[in-house]
Amino acid sequence: MAVRRSRPSLYISVDIEADGPIPGPYSMLSLGAAVAGVQDAGGFTAADPEARTFYRELRPISDDFVPEALAVSGLDRERLSLEGLEPALALGQFTRWVREVSEGAQPVMCGYPASYDWTFLYWYLIRFTGESPFGHSGCLDMKTLYATKAGVPLRAVAKRSMPAELLPRRRHTHHALDDAVEQAELFAHLMAWQGPASPR
View 1 (spheres, rainbow, N blue to C red):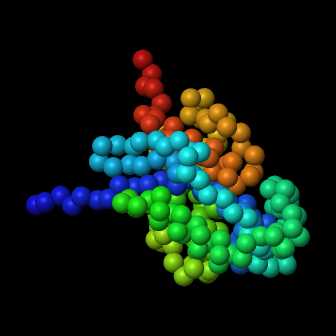
View 2: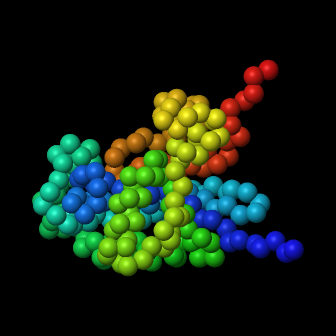
């Protein structure tokens, strides 16, 4: 029986900043993405996370926001109401960018953790473009990846508990592009990591 060859996976680190816990009632205010690397039958090859990136700031879609959530990013909703891109335009541009950088491969969104960012990203893609370049399940959670390799419970995972060699050199700034690039570096380290050394 012939083995079906699958296309390579092109991993794209995504970070979003939003003004609340869920999309719809609340708004995604910025979207950053960076190509983290590609995986094929020969293994994973890391990319320079600063080489192929995407960043947009979006117009809020509602008047509701959680002040504590907004404070995390430091973004100005009033400015974005005037200067932010319409979500349909921003997400259309993002979809085209994903398709360009992933030509010949299947794009996979990765995040730390992916759950929050994927919830906003997928909702916005379907709501404002009608489709997702990642499909409905093309996401990978870095916390789960680490927990699996480290053999620890998922809820025990935190960056401060990870080995120093896995941690990115870049700072986590809560700017969506900065954090997407930082997370792409973490992802490349996780993909190369063989897990904790066995005790002698």
